Length: 138
Image (tube, rainbow, N blue to C red):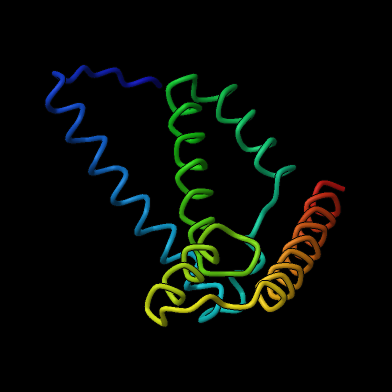
């Protein structure tokens, strides 16, 4: 069944920030469980599973929850992108912070090596998750 409700603008903004905070905490908790609970790796999904789930949400629940889901996915990507892992934007922020604290530049060769290794690991992880998604659909 469909439940419709309407909020005034103040309540809507309040709910937005509440949902953003709760979603951010849930994303960070889920990421932490990848290291503390090895069985949680079975729940990791890639772009194929995201497409399957989002099309199912659109079909079964409607456009409102579909948009909410994609907002959650966007927040997830933004948070993960800020992790200080080589190849992500968080890595660049970490390098800038270290250089600012040390008052000297990290050699470009060192930054490039770390970034290339990080990107290679990200590509391997992406391919692994893609294969996992394809096998899961069979």
